[in-house]
Length: 335
Image (cartoon, rainbow, N blue to C red; front, top):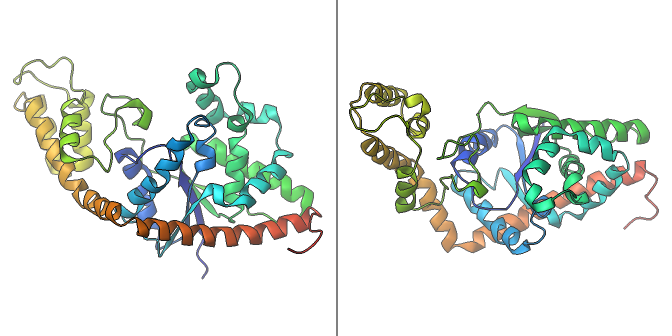
């Protein structure tokens, strides 16, 4: 039986952190045996709000691949490719742009939220590229005939916009394109060290998969704890402590419960608790960090993954575009 195809990806704007690991990477590793998985490195999309810093985008393309492979994504099972090297996606984006109104894009809740967050960049005049990135994302998914798109709840409006575009296209030109389904991640967004609801590259509150032991210890020691707890024997509240929050991620359930119990009873000091947590995180991430260091020393592995993956993805995209152009009466001559 033919496997269903997953299309997912990341913007190359920085190395991946534990939020990405627990939020998506673990699922990708689990799903690579069951599905035909494609992971795009969305460099074109990254340029929509990094257009003035192309070096940042370019320099992080290979960093993403190192993180993927270090976490257990197998390039023999998963196709990893670069978005900008699939020109068919750009062509399909242009065709799709005729099927979506400016007002519909402006109403997309995800886009509205992101524009508000980037007011310092755009001011009162958002770029066409950023406003229209859901159209480009729809092309990414459908040019590869994606069946399933794993995403969080905040991304649901983007997938629904893709589905609308597919329905509109098929109603005009015939049943050519697949309407993808969203696979909602059960993993909640991981909070930052500062207690922020989001762990983010730009927020300075993340532990990266590539962080050294010294960096992990330093970051954990800065994590927000119960502000009402001054002395070691003060009764603590682990529910408002980020150290306790991360203990739950990296510890067994029994150990986590013991951490909370000792905290509530004033038997565990914050410094001791942080050092214990740092040790747990270092141990957990050690295999990932070691594999990443090996990949750093063997860049030819990364190049091979990207070259072969992009070649395979483009071959699939060409097949889709042949059908699209035939349906749109744009198949004037064969290449």
